[in-house]
Image 1: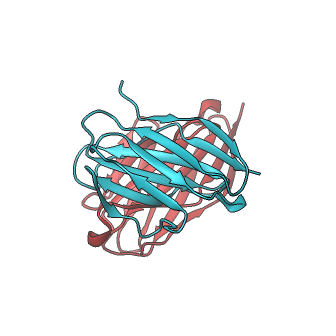
Image 2: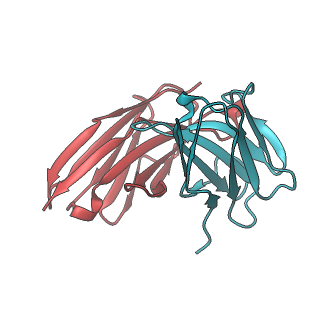
Amino acid sequence: GENVEQHPSTLSVQEGDSAVIKCTYSDSASNYFPWYKQELGKRPQLIIDIRSNVGEKKDQRIAVTLNKTAKHFSLHITETQPEDSAVYFCAAKGRGSTLGRLYFGRGTQLTVWP
Amino acid sequence: EAEVAQSPRYKITEKSQAVAFWCDPISGHATLYWYRQILGQGPELLVQFQDESVVDDSQLPKDRFSAERLKGVDSTLKIQPAELGDSAMYLCASSLGPPGETQYFGPGTRLLVL
């Protein structure tokens, strides 16, 4: 099946700086890549996603880029705020027979210092 | 805004006991997923339902875990007997249509096996 690697495992930034989290995947047939934010004790929430027919997607301070050739995708958060502090998970949708199964990375603990 | 509901939120049990978790997906969502999230890791799929049918249970330890979605709406995940290594967060998610649609997560059930 799919294998998703996520880096870094922890990331600390100063408020206002940018944060970048990177993920790689192994299955070239994967075609859907969501990012989830999970605050302590709360449910994972989708913050942005991208499909393999586009290379970049933006939503206010959040953007995701996808490089299908290199099989990696990244989350970019600009002008970080303390409320961005959370664990962020990337995921990739498995191919055909796995019927939409998501494979998650191990997560990145982002801390934004005021 | 509709959300996925889960109960209980927390469960403490002794090893060898039976435990059950309940999930009510967003109304109208045909696909339901059960994930297990070990502390410090991303969610891993245990079982996926399309309506009342299991479409992927390849990672479900079937000797002790069972899941059902009898009427294609809410679902129950059972562990019998529980083992120490089952301590984790159990997350339920649902999506509207075919697999690959955006998955919405419930708040999870945190299980501690003593």
